[in-house]
Amino acid sequence: MPRYKLSIEYDGMPYKGWQRQEGLPTVQAAIEKAMSQFAQHEVLVFGAGRTDAGVHARGQVIHVDFEKVWKPYKIMEATNGLLKLEGHPISVISAEEAPDDFDARFSAKYRSYKYRIINRRAPLTVDLERALWVRFPLDVEAMHEAAQVLVGEHDFTTFRSTDCQAKSPIRTLDKLDVNRISETEIEIIAEARAFLHNQIRSFAGTLRLVGDGKWSRQDLIDALHAKDRTRCGPVAVPYGLYFMKVGY
Image (cartoon, rainbow, N blue to C red; front, top):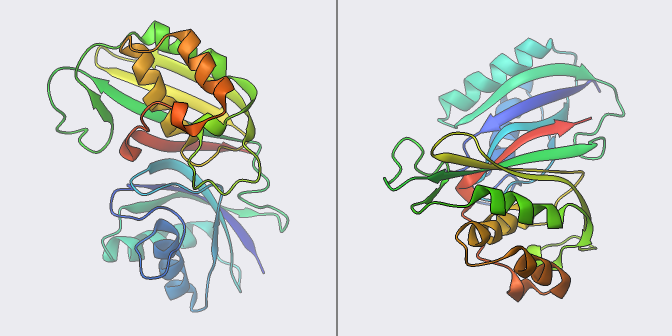
């Protein structure tokens, strides 16, 4: 069966996350329905990573197998047409043939996420449900400096959901940068081979405490070493998070 690699972007707000769930709207289920409709056989979609309800994607990667050979642009256009017809804010932005041994999840070398914070006094309009709104000024330099404590291999028990199904809390974080990219916007960039459930949102909420002056760098170190979920800061809202890129 010919295999294809596709890049996907979506607005996560209407969905209960990426992964198909019986009776609930999910991104995976919407794409599978559209592809199965034009291919005239059941199509299963395999993603590079899961996203929670409300989390967006700019560069989710999937692989799919079809029973016959299709030109990649036909797959892209047919899928997008059917998704649009059903009112889904999901788009296939690229498609290409892939080797039989390519796996969107297991072939990935790293995953990159961005967390957006709009830091201004005025409430959000255009960026409503697209970023976390923080009214009072944040110390971005302090946030970035503290974030470097988390880079490297650690036991991230403090920063993962109690519902996380990963067998181990140990992960290697390759990058955690905090930058002010404009007068009003801050971005947190996180990069690793794999992440734990709610790990990045836990980072974002905790680093906000540092930016507010409520936590110090040492407080973050102590929380990490505690290996205790109750020592984490508030988990940041899901709609500020974007799945940006997968490296192969």
